[in-house]
Length: 447
Length: 81
Image (cartoon, rainbow over all chains, first blue to last red; front, side, top):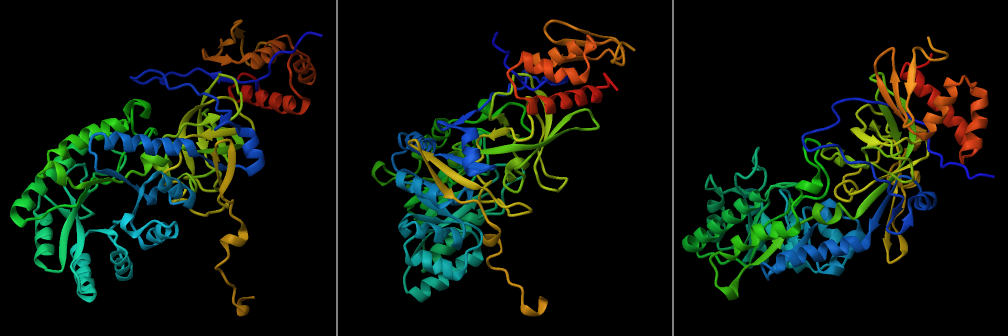
C-alpha cells in the first residue's frame, strides 16, 4: 500500500491587495507546538484551556541580563520590580530570589511583599494614594517612600511628629517628556513645584529629602525620553544640592521599559523597535554618572521595570471555539479567552501562533474573544492558518498586566503554570464558582 | 454556468484559481486543490469523503466536517450555490 499524503484542512483563500506596508509583508505565522519543552496540546489537555504558562528560566535570565546592563554602567544600580505588572506570589518570589527589591504602589502590594518576607528596607513605596496606616507601617519598617503630593507630605510630617523623629523621604518629580505630558504624578520641575516641594520638606524640620523619583511613562521605545529624564534629574539634583544642601542617598529612574509586543498603532514590529536593556542602560547611566557627586558617594540608582521583565516569559494557550465568515468576506474566529484575561489588547497587536501543524496557508482573520460582548475583539486582523474548533493558538508575551488586571466576568479565570527545569508547577489554580462567590451572601429574607 | 460552478474556473497545478466570471483569484492548499479538482470532474459530495480518506492520512469524522466547511467556504466565495 502506498503511503498516504499529509492532510491539512482544505482551504480556499481569496487574494487581496493591501496586505503589505512600507516595511514589507506581515510576518508569517510560525507554529508553536511546544512551550518550554512541553507539547502545547499536552499542557492544555492536562491543565485546561485557556492556560497561562511561565518560563521560569527566561524570567531569571531577563532579570540577570537587565541587572548586568545597568550595573556595568552604574555600579550602584539596582532593580526594584514593579509589582503592579504581575504580583503573583511565585513571580515576585522568583525575582526576589534573584535579588530584586519590590516597588509597590498600594498597601495591598506592600502586604504581598511583606508576606513574601521582603525586608521593609528593600521596598520602595510609590503611588499617588497611600493611607496613613500604610505610611506608618512603611516608615516603621524602613521602606523608601516617594512623596507624590502636598497632602501626603503634610500627612508624613504629622507621622514624623508622632514618631518623634526626622523621616527620610523621596520626592517624586515630573517634567515634560511625553505628549501628552504625565503631570498626574509628583511635582513638576518646569513650573518650579518640585523645587518648592523639596524646600518645603527640608524646611519642615521633620523630613529629610534623600531621594528623587521620576517615571518617564509607559512602554517607552524612544530612549531619548530617558536621556531627557536623566538629564533633568542631574540638573535638578545639582540645583537643590547647591541651593538647599540636599545630599541624595538614591535616585530612581522609574519604569516604562518596553517589551517585544507591537503596539496597535505601530508600523514596525516590536522586534525592530524595542530597545535592548543595554540601549536603555547606555542612555541613562552615563548621564547620571555625571551627577554632582564624587566617585565614592554616588547615590544608589533604582530602576523599576515590570513589563520589560515579565511580559515575554509568559504565554497564553487558548483554543478555537468557532470560526465564521463575516459579511465583509473576512474570516473570523472565536477563542475561549477574552479581553477579561487579555486587557493589554487595548495596546498590543498580539501574535497568535498555532499550537499544532496547520499548514502554511494563512488568511487575514478577525480574532474574537469568547465573551458575549461585542467589544471583545482580540485582534482586528491577524494572519492565521486554517483552524478548526478545538485547535490551539499560543499568544506569546502576555505576562505583564494581563493577570493583575484580569477581571472575573462571564467566565472563570484560568490556571497559571510555571515550567522550570523540566518540572511543571501550578502557581495559580483555575478559579471555581465557590471561590468567586466566597464573600457573597443571600440573607434569609431574600430566599 | 460551468458544471456545479457559477462560472468557469481555471485551476493551476500549484493551486492558483481564477474565476472567469468575477475576475477574482484565489489560492487553494493541497487538500483544497484535491477536492476542487474532483469537483470539476463532477465527483459527487457523497463520494468525496471516500476519496479524501483514500488519498490522505485523516480520520472520517474530521474529514467529514472539513469537507462540509470547505463547501461552505466555496459558497461564501460565490463559486458555487
